Length: 510
Ligand code: NAD
Image 1 (tube, rainbow, N blue to C red):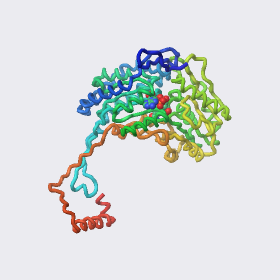
Image 2: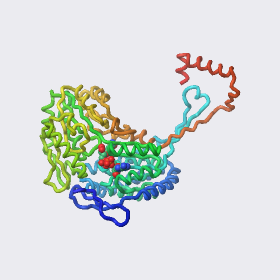
Image 3: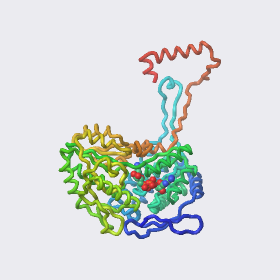
Image 4: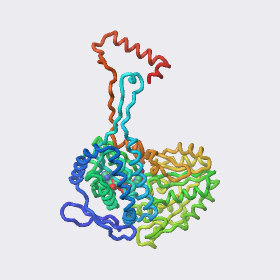
């Protein structure tokens, strides 16, 4: 049964019905915005943005703090809605969809002003004697925000807070599978005093997303799959607008022979099962040296077996959020089994529950001929491959089209950092699951097919700005120069020789 299905409607508008993966019952319907409606939203956003850009950082921050107040007040409502839409475990709904956004919005309310403060300095080199440069962080205008279904509030609230703090308006196209939590976020923003039209939600599927790309926005902040990311990048290239593309991953975990086994096994379980495995930086591949392979696998099995899965309350592993993802998980498991993988825990869809549930699963005897080790599975699966040593683990970790994040486990922290630095990924964690997105000071983004550009912190919020340098000449006379003569040319040649031909002077002048 499809959780997201088109239903008959009057006129040209496309209407959709959404079912909860928990109960398979309808939780609501929505109508797709047309291309004209999307364009009109961008125009309204542009008008509202002109006013917003004149507000001081303190005034903008005050609205962000009020949004945090609204999220705290309505946290139960947010959690209930997200659990209905996605079926994620209750604790994960609270930590990922309320706690994390509160942390993110608060971060930009407190630090945004500092990240974006106008800065004046003397330039380097000979220019320092004649110029002063001032960098102004100007808002871009209207940002198009396109988000996926695995973190419906978190993945919207974080870029939204950055874009607003930088003085922009936002038009948001949420995932067609989780449309309602964006409406709730918009309501919270409005009640918090965010001026009308600064944050607008346009509902719809890929067609509406594509319309937003061509609706005259000044930047696209996209989070989603590699395939869609490519289309988004192409459209942004055509429209000559910047974009950040936060795409899929296939994160590797390297367990060193000296790792604390208890801690590493716990990391494998958390890293693979968190958010039902629907986590862009979820651990999808685990490489373990043969010297510790058996005790490590035993520990993972021991930790995975008692985990609970239930349709309500505080169970450990939630539903599969979308039937489309269930198909991918089942295909990858089938392919792995046919190629010799051993399933030690779980492995088959959990049909004891009426919704879409795949149990926490542990698989061994996997290798790189299997989709489970090469393509994004996005399911609650710990897939463990035995390797000779840490060198082979690193080589296999880097043998991937993806490069989002990764993690290394060892008691030798310097070695962990050394191995981590050799992983071809956007970021790495040592002795923890991927935490980069939660650390605002750490620029987050993928390499290879996992993305383009980085988000969060200083780098991220400045990405919602045009850095506008104003260069003032501080001398009091005309620069002159004309007419060019042989003497003036010789003067320039002499300057090149004197300054840059002298090993000491050239260092002083740059
Ligand atoms: P998706 O690419 O199918 O959809 C993402 C969004 O793009 C949705 O809102 C969708 O409606 C919209 N869209 C679809 N076609 C479009 C088009 N032609 N033009 C514009 N917009 C279009 O991805 P998904 O299945 O919703 O999300 C899961 C993917 O997101 C996974 O690959 C996951 O790894 C990735 N993800 C990445 C990060 C990250 O930060 N790197 C975070 C979360 C999820």
